[in-house]
Length: 57
Image (cartoon, rainbow, N blue to C red; front, side, top):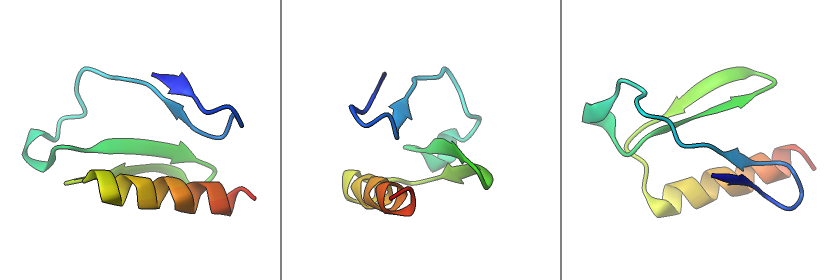
């Protein structure tokens, strides 16, 4: 876990999100609520991080 130096993104490990059949997956929480991201790859994750950073700029 940890937070980016700009404070925009924090990563926190959790035990279970009840989606073993859709792993790897994670959730994001922002002003528009909680969203689940399933069947993620490194590439898809980095695209999402870029989108999140742009949306807060």
